[in-house]
Image 1 (cartoon, one colour):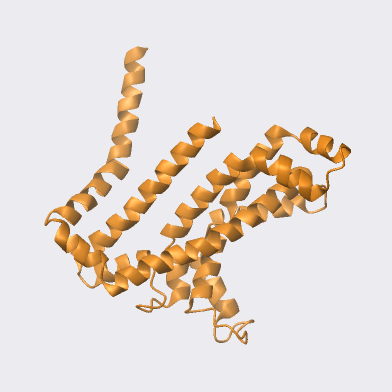
Image 2 (spheres, helix red, strand yellow):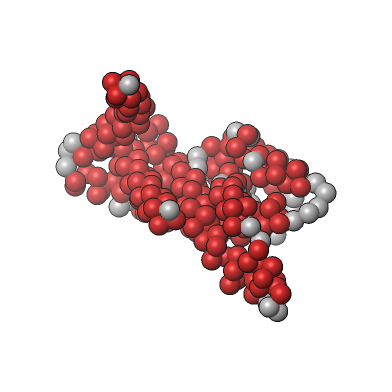
Amino acid sequence: MRASRLTLRFVALGYLAVLLLVPVGLVFWRTFEHGLAPVWASVTTPAAIHAFWLTVEVAAIAVPLNAIFGVVAALALVRGRFAGKWLLDALIDLPFAISPVVVGLALLLVYGRSGWLSELPVQVIFAVPGIVLATVFVSLPFVAREVAPVLREVGDEQEQAAATLGASRWQAFWRVTLPSIRWGLAYGVVLSTARALGEFGAVSVVSGKIAGQTETLTLLVEKRFENFDLAGAYAASTLLALIALATLLAMTALRRRAE
């Protein structure tokens, strides 16, 4: 019995190493094989700096929007009673089912030059608003799907008790509901952040890949690789990997505190 367990663990770890650890390790090795100076030079170019801050800016806009929507949607699904709840439940999972490229094309059809909303006073396609919209959509479900199970687990007894003591709905939410879902909310925010930082498909369609304007880190990696700037591509990839590692560490820490 013990031997079979050890075999299963070995197979699982070997599978994980082949799919993840070895490729990522090779990227790190290729990045630093010539020292730190070329890496620093690659990640401090104006294009790389702009791509980094644009990626952070998009995530800083998209994640709070998804956090607000996720909490409201979770409350509606768990506490609400209304017709069409099943439809809302299905729509939240829509980004999981639709390819990001299709999402980008849909935004292009709606907000593009000949789209339904092409006459808006603000340019959406081939600009930052389009990147934000695409990122919001692909990272939409995470907060809602993390908060909803927590709401079901804690129940609504404390909220009802607060109401009987004279608390308004907003006071009950702020003082009772929000503290009880804080770890689920934080975990959903971390997952949404990771998805927003690493988005490529939808962003590549709506951004136009304009250097210095609409080029995120993931698009910069693609551009450098296609231009045979492998050192620059590896350096940008390593920066993304470090951000992902920080996100993973944050998720692990939040999970331990929640438990």
